Image: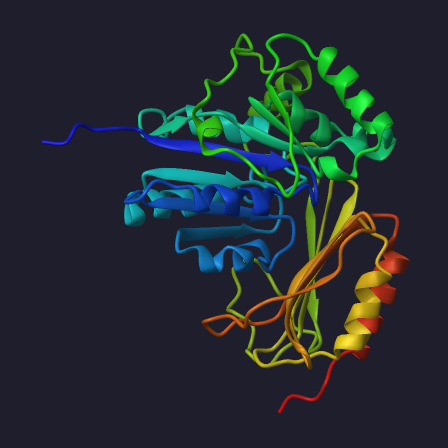
Length: 358
């Protein structure tokens, strides 16, 4: 009889746009022959773009949209994770939390009943962009700090874009980290080695780190998870119907717009009708002019299907193969909450990019 074995599990975390999904694609390409891996993806927005970027990898996939796993999506997280465990019986699970998610509560959930004895939480991998060390908006954001402080493996991604000052700042930052320090690797294109997943978790005395301890204490005191995140969700679409989390799926011919707020950011997600095509030139101008934190999507244009991948003013449209199965085009934008005017301008431009459906 086969001996029972806890399922190895890793968190692949990091702030907005640092390359988490790309890193997961690299890992999936390295999975041992005969092993069945599963991925749970959590997104700040409501429609799920990253899951579409992993759809061609041949792994079991669960998506948890609409906020970070530690608060408003906690129940959806456990439902999705339980479904993966029971139906897929995977040999390893990778979890990609939203870039605005605190990993501390996720770690607590995964290491306590009912998951203790079922899951074997291994190294937490955090991706970062060392250029953010010069940005107070990133460096002073508690989520950014939390993600790095909980890393067992810290990947400084996009190293080919670093200046010498960026690199020196990174080295000084790592040198100042308290012991035990994570494995720190500079990398490009989110390249990651599979063996890093099995590195031991760092012993932090059970307290994780001061900010996480305070965060966890606050979460424990509140049975309804009413803590500092203060997420709220505004739902609307072209036909002025009310939308709740438990409503029926929107009609296939609707353009659905959903807003998500939290941690000082606002996300707007657009879900387009199946078969909707947008004007490539207008879309390219929209993407190139986007100055927010993150713009991503999977869109059918009059020049074929394209991915949108823009982070902090870099990146744009990338041609992609048409999906093998029917897929509703989708876009998600994330900006500071104070930048609603830019978001409204983006919405107007996207509306102008529509082409009549055949």
